[in-house]
Image 1 (tube, helix red, strand yellow):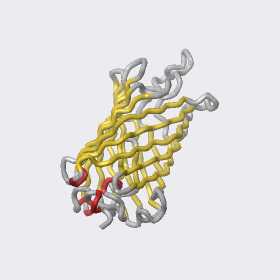
Image 2 (spheres, helix red, strand yellow):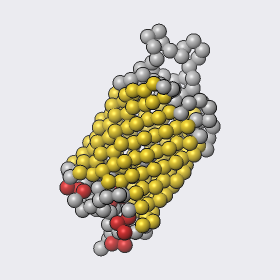
Image 3 (cartoon, rainbow, N blue to C red):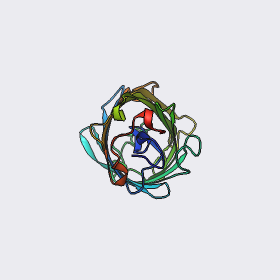
Image 4 (cartoon, rainbow, N blue to C red):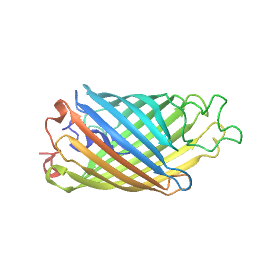
Length: 271
């Protein structure tokens, strides 16, 4: 399936577990379920489950909704519900790196189970009414994507997110991934490398941010014409990063954009 001339691997909305790219073909639905497991150097692991649905619209627009659940320290529940929109500035390869604008608003619907920032001062771990609520937040991203030499596919996301209330957490950074096909027939298996950097502060630590950088291998396998399974194992390179992050994503496409089936072999893309 191709969105405005883009390769199939860059026409699925989610390029890899940590990166998204370009837009969907018009009237094509993308459904994805994502697992993220964070193993820390100290303390208990954190498990996050995300469900997302996206619809491609004409004129290079797209809209999406997602919900996230968290499981930590024996408890769990919904954390956020998000609404998203994106717009690609031009058809594929009309502008270098194919920039796409992305905006998201997150509605906090649960309680904070695992603080991303520094621990609160003694005696302030919980409010009188219990754990603090997950705040609403907004996020903007610049999505970049390109294919090089009809072999390597690459995507990069620059992002900025800010919480509206509470500690007013502020996060910016980038994620990028590059992959190439191993099984050339319909590009059913791809392998590559993925990385993510995050700079995080709260209202009291603006001058002393937390730096998280993770990097590791990624793999994408397409068991059928419309389904794909992605796995990434990323390793922390800074003291603020998790020791290991594991991502698993299952996704499928529905609609006119999925009728072409498997991604075209790289050798035939530009014919």
